Length: 107
Image (cartoon, rainbow, N blue to C red; front, side, top):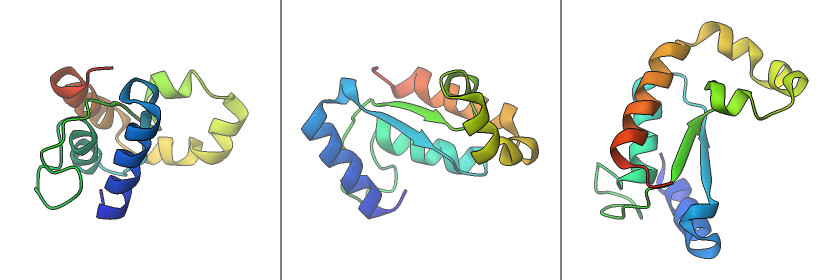
């Protein structure tokens, strides 16, 4: 997650409260999604950005996860994400996201 997006997430969390912020990711690989999820939950693991050492514990989902898919209009999901869902390793992404959430998410 780039430094500008880290700042946005931090600012939104300060403005709205961590319990009211959900981060939605769309990375194409499980490892990339996991790194971004770790950044918004446990803090920037590279210690380079605004979230270095900042443990927000935010709720984080990936756009292909069932929890997200079940909560959006099916037609919109199919139009916007459906094609990617067919080519991404949804199981690996979901497993990585579940692992990060179980370790670091507070919400």
